[in-house]
Length: 232
Image (cartoon, rainbow, N blue to C red):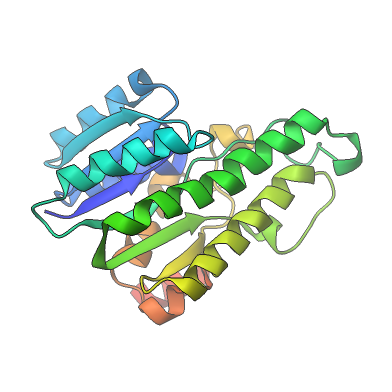
């Protein structure tokens, strides 16, 4: 059975991706800051024919992340290791487009970097000893990480950091590590901004982790256009 780990799985892309893998019959190890928030996601995974493992974990805490990946490794011990890791947990403090960097608090800056950047580092670092030989690591991101726009402040900075972390791991690990940019997605993270439904882009992430050319993923950004071109 395939085993995947998804951080920040209680909502948005993380929840949609967990359900996507549940429908494929996978073992899905999901975490969020509140384990109770994962209950409906886990129920959906199991109702679809998959296996769900839930654990409370805060990616700001490396010990939480270590325990999460050890839990996933035990679940996958009979199947050769973890097959895919999605470092998906993220936060945005403020309204998108209305958080200019010069007006942000130090606490908001630190929180964005700690969750969106350092959280990716902790997730991948703790996953490395437990990855299957052909496993892939995927980091969700967006154009704002590469094309700064006014009003996105330290959130944009943190996403650029997340991409840099992914690129450096890609340069150092045998397993492919890359970024997936699904374009604008509507979720609580973006304060309900118009965009694609997370359910519509979840297959893109599974494609990146299973079917995309590993060399195209490794150290690079796969876009919505890349996915549509490869699967049309």
